[in-house]
Length: 502
Image (cartoon, rainbow, N blue to C red; front, top):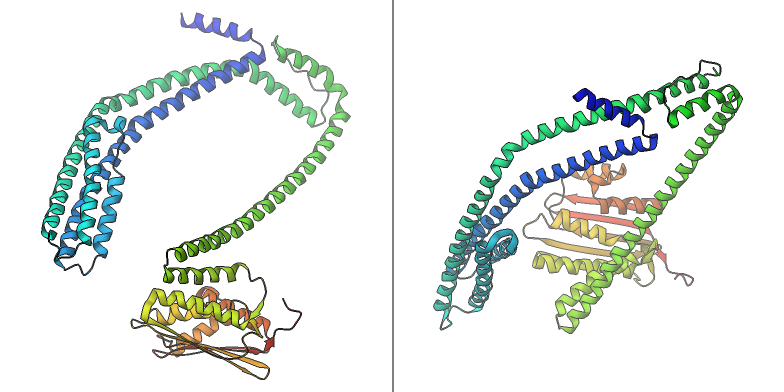
């Protein structure tokens, strides 16, 4: 019975044209692939995605419970400590807010019970935040301070109780979904094995028919073509039993092979030439593509800083309208630094501009460190005439803060001294930070001389290389003593602005 069916299928297959055979085979392959993909997608959704959703829901609800408990502890500690340190409480409140926002809140995904409980938690949390913030803003001597405090405590207990209930319901739902899917997971390997056997068997039968009716004749033609490629144009004719397009192709091939020797050789030479031209064209297109990518990256590097600079100007204007003078001054200082970096293509700038940039940078650092850092400028030079290399002062000041002042617990001072004598300009940038030992100082100098900027500091190494490259007769010296501080001295020819400079 099975052999008779197989023979009928073979006869029907041989009656098809090559186009229909290929279409049938391709369609069958695509159908099998599509079924496999759909089955795999279903398996992934069934096993991984649903279980992952259970874990995510449990994690989100667990995080809420932990966050509420932590906030209650930090709130009570803050109240008992007479409101001296609030940073831990603020962190705990921010964590609770994020945990509430991350709660699953899809009616179709979590069901009626959990949706109602989650809605209650979110609503209660909003009211709790209002009462908590109002209580924190009150003074301890307010008439209803104790009443408000215990209201907050009660709402914390209420939220923790609801979170625990929601956690239990989430675990119950996940456990029910898991037990519901277990039987399917047990049967899944059997389904995979059986379906795989059926698909593989069908593909093997179809592949055997393709081999007999298409691949074998094509292989015979390939072998004949290989002999022709070896200049054997008089070998035996290819013999096939096909009555379709392949049979006609073999007949025409046998007639043509004796008359195409020289023609084939000419085509081969032409093909090689075209391949070389094609490779050159591909290399050219690849080069053009890389150039376009470089242009795009350059454009991005310009857009992002300009966007930030323009945004700082807008924020500065808003601060001015809101009469936030300190904020406005800080934003203007930062904006000035960005403007200097974006719009200073020249190698040399006025000394006054470099000192202004250093002052803006120090202002921002003083706002950051407060009284731990101090700044002093002693300049006896014609600031509006003397030209210095751009981007010199700020990197050295930054280096002094990072490596000298910041590690020192009590902070320190930055001092810039500029002197102009005849045709020389002497610049000294010093700090009273942690300094360096003789060995550390010598190692730093060696790294600078060998252009090892990665260990010598990017800003310091950059300034050193520019000074030594731009001024053959210039001098760049570093002096330091452990626990006393560090001084960088730059001695360069004095260059003043002329009338034709812009």
